[in-house]
Amino acid sequence: MRINQARLGDRLAGSKLVFFDCDGVLLDSNGVKLAAVEHALAAYPSALRERCKVSFKLNFGRSRRWHFEAFESLAGTAAEADFVSASIARYEHYLQQHYSAAPPVAGAATLLQQLADCAVKCVVISGGNEKEINLALAANGMDHYLARIIGSPVAKAAAIRTLLEQYDCTPGETVFLGDAIADAEAAIVCNVPFLFVSGHALVKRDALSQCWPVGHWAGEVENLQPDAPITRFNLVAQTIQEDS
Image (cartoon, rainbow, N blue to C red):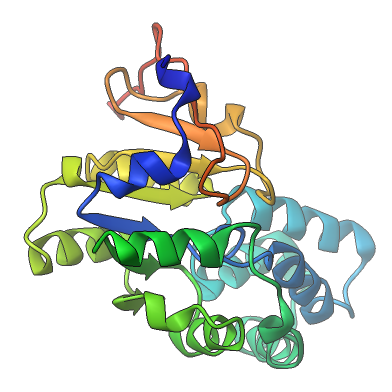
């Protein structure tokens, strides 16, 4: 079998620990998060809202405080005095009403069950709120498959390092499934193999693969169906330039 014909379930079954992002990976919830941004900024001009949503997509996976501080910079003098806290309150109010209704990504529950049968530990690392994530995963019957859920304000790379130590794993015994640049960056920093789950992602594969480090294992799957084929990133002549 050629390497780019490997199947998701088979690849993960050989792991000791699997890291999952939540939004866009376990839950089809990226659209809910975008709608929450639109709701939070409803009083602002449409042009500003669109600029903020572009920023949100490119930086998806970071904490909501990070996002709304970035939005405040984009708003400039148009921002209300308590822009960040007031906007986050509106954002969270929207999520309270809609987030738990987000359905699972195709194959998510089946894959988690298969990994449980293989004694593979599964954990969530997310830029989202832990309580919100727990409630949404419980609503979809997936919470009991997950040994840990770590959300904001813990950085993803810090969460990975903590879990590697907790479960006595080397990076090569794990895989991180994510859908955002922030996920890929954390995987690279921690030297963890990475799978880009593309079906609901807010960025295209090229945003990750065009600067992927040579020799760092990475691939793409459309969803979490256990038989989903893995397409490896093209690693030829690709490096990440270090800051000088």
